[in-house]
Length: 239
Image 1: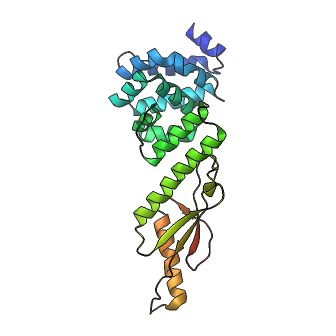
Image 2 (image 1 turned 180 degrees about the horizontal axis):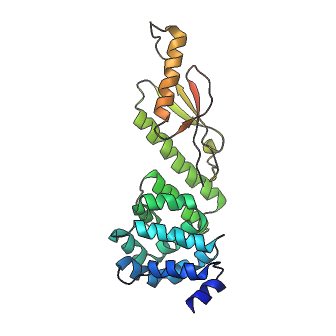
């Protein structure tokens, strides 16, 4: 009967998905018992995914990574919003699934009154709230821009520049209109680097360029730019 129900909901491989579902709601684990209780809240998002069978497998990945973390079970049990957002996140985004499977505590960022986590947790939260239509398009742009601001700020702090330094957002980042396929276009602006006697003024610019590239590689990819203190950095926000 359950396989027939899954087929009716749009699952193309109901027998296989039934086996996955049986593992998810395994009563021998607390998280399995919790998922069995809240699955009616999660099922609509999974069934409406572009590929319901794949969405269920992505949920399985996150649940497997969360095994033994009672905080995740507590969050899903105590807050139906968390369960619904989790289902929508895995149903709509393999990228969000990868972030959750890599650090399942990021599920906690989906709680209604969640404390800010790392930048990736904030991004997962935006994906989930966008997928549940809690965020309007303009709100999504503002939320993604806030995450991007944090990424850039963290990168600058990690680089520890030893001269006056500013990062200026351009394009959709500056306008706070990012979407999930946006690049981050920024300008690095800094005081002129002191000339290196052994290289001359032109050599100092080259050294400065290499320094910026080295710092940017902590989490961002450098695009083509100009020497002389102003550089363009782009980082893709993947789906």
